[in-house]
Image 1 (cartoon, rainbow, N blue to C red):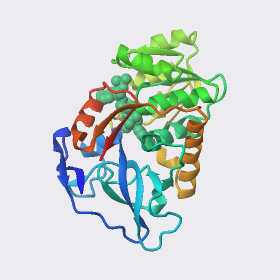
Image 2: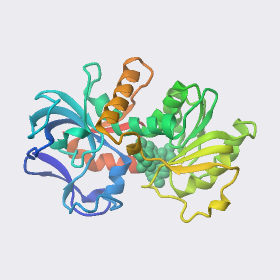
Image 3: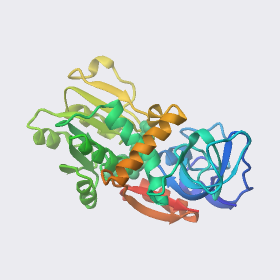
Image 4: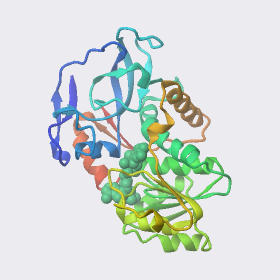
Length: 322
Ligand SMILES: NC(=O)c1ccc[n+]([C@@H]2O[C@H](COP(=O)([O-])OP(=O)(O)OC[C@H]3O[C@@H](n4cnc5c(N)ncnc54)[C@H](OP(=O)(O)O)[C@@H]3O)[C@@H](O)[C@H]2O)c1
């Protein structure tokens, strides 16, 4: 089968489209023909050696996708050959076939198309965790969303609006404003240098926002502290672009609550994974949530997908078609 491997830690040039042996499902696994693989910012982090280093290179990259069941490993029940399934974390998803632990699979309902299913999983469950669980959005809340035209950002904006909140988004260039506004952002600030706080405070009559969602690296950290109101919540979530470094807890202002949110904490069991994915699918079917697919590439063009995402030029979800 064809797959995209990373040959070493490094820039997008370490990726290669190669022939790999067919996987065979072990006990508890399901063999899936991959229809669509998701590209996530975390894939760039893995490629740069930030995690998943216990698996030696060359290894197949990618953690998310959807496809059709080809075979069941010993002891698997609840799935059948031909069934459409999606997953949020199964290393080796940039491939034509993958063996996925059954517990990581979600059945995809007929009313969700293939690309929407693949695009909903990582970024959808992440945004749902942040805006409904890490921070419980209440009507009238004002959220500040960084990278508001990105995959997670567009969904955070929509979910905040769904719960009656308002959104101030930040994007790095003017050509992303329309996408952020179409997702429901009430105001969009264009800034790529961490100088957004003054504008955001003006938009809230000086009071600041209830919650800030920041996965955009060290350059935005201080501004994100500055835009929060008293007792506001700082949802920090961007390990790939990096954090603020060592932090003196007594330097934190305004009794804010600061935490590192990780999507996996919403879904510690297969039952919860299926429950939350099912709710995302229902929101999509009811027209409450729109999955924005920014670009679709052939699997062989994974280098281009990575380069585009790192260039800050993309909006919405990037997908690969094996
Ligand atoms: N903690 C978790 O559980 C979790 C789960 C999923 C994703 N994440 C994090 O969420 C963030 C968004 O992920 P995503 O997959 O949805 O990607 P994405 O938002 O579609 O793309 C990344 C965006 O980050 C912004 N950015 C800021 N500084 C950048 C830089 N130096 N280089 C490149 N981009 C930069 C860009 O938006 P602007 O140019 O508009 O600023 C870019 O569009 C990432 O930090 C990712 O690691 C965390």
